[in-house]
Length: 102
Ligand code: FES
Image (tube, rainbow, N blue to C red; front, side, top):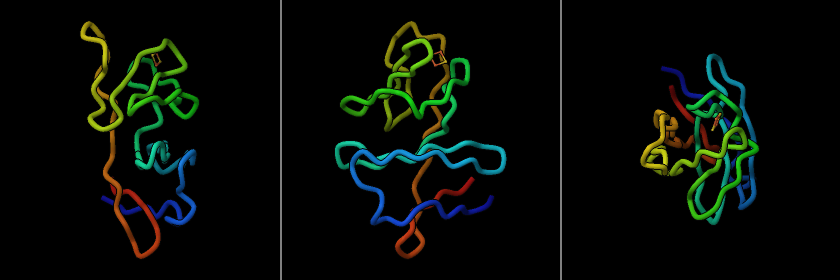
């Protein structure tokens, strides 16, 4: 497991969205309504990047086929969804930087 330092905390304000292409994984760091989220940038349905997804009330809607996922748990919202859970990662901190380990 490796730690990747992503961004200075002071820059992660509401509306922030940035993709980090790390070894073996593309990570989306974003902040909406005062909450910071770190997730795998690939939709679990067919892998469309979630960086263009619309976010409303803690739910992201994939721009590919419209499936929605809870940003906290990663669970698909639709009961009959054929999707796996969205991979949500825990933020880690190194002084004034936010990062992630995997
Ligand atoms: S690729 Fe995201 S809903 Fe199909």
